[in-house]
Image (tube, rainbow over all chains, first blue to last red; front, side):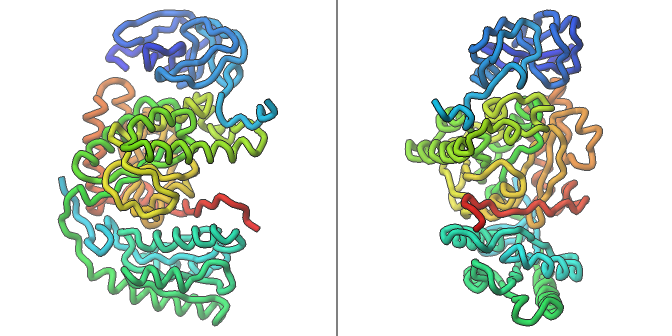
Length: 101
Length: 383
């Protein structure tokens, strides 16, 4: 959220994902605001407006951090610039499907 | 800060309605017909009131009583079928300790006569209600409920933080803010509990969240797609934790004074949590029964719901939504999204809108007449 419009923002400096502020296409150069800094990376998949992309390598089983808090866990390895959503992240809560353990 | 409301026993109304309330879903037809004949009256049509296990019969009765006791209600007519589980007499007797309440029973005289008798009662109530005038009262008389619905990623970064600042401003001025949606505290309970006024209040919150999550887990499935909803997921929300963390900031930064059960009248001032599900129909009913005169509703997707006896003020931080669905959105926060307006400045704008609505300005949902969003939350089976 700045006067020069970036294409994604990181909400908290502990986060390993950014939020897309416009539709991003695979191969696009993405400018990301992290606090006062602007960083750049290349999108490895299409990322719709409002969806998340990885700003760090996130190995399978690692926590996804947004707002500086845990919002789920990677179900497979996620590369920098990849779309982060229900296809590669699971919730840790309300999981009746895991009840057997 | 002041607003102009209807001063009555039990609080200051921002509206002055005659409510026509079915005591059981089966009486809805007659309620609708009475309100069609008296369009200034407000219909409260839900689908509960019978075939519950006994503790829930009392629970539904409590909610019906408390809905009629909402400060926006001048007087109430209860329409009973006559064979339902809840007692229409008990409900009306309790309400009549504070305001006028009557009952018509469909099985006593038939549908047509119940409609004409009910209409005559409502006409008289409307004449009485319309004698009341607004008076200037302090902002501290306001109980504002805050809810988020149709959330997308902008909710967590724009409209909910703005709502949180509004909550802080109201509480700093001696008012009350109610928030709920226990489902949307799953994964964020530690953040809310940190601000509890006592360990006891923190434990009440943890217990409400745990009980909600256990009922989900008992179904043996992953809750995703139930919550977050398919609309949330399309909007970019991946898990309930993500939705919750974005949701709880709408309650601001004040101390959490108490946790109350669904539909309980909120008596203390300050920030109060009510144990509700996330769905609009039940949440809005719970807040109205709790005594909220207005609900501030944050939305990313731009959903339209209002409530028959309680104005619902919509704010959105999604600039595309604000453009496309301006007929649903009372306050456009698009500039906050682009960093062109501060959250504090936007919160002042929202509070001004709330005070205008409290003093008579119609909300977008009121202008649309979008107000059938009513259900009473029950936790047990319908049997």
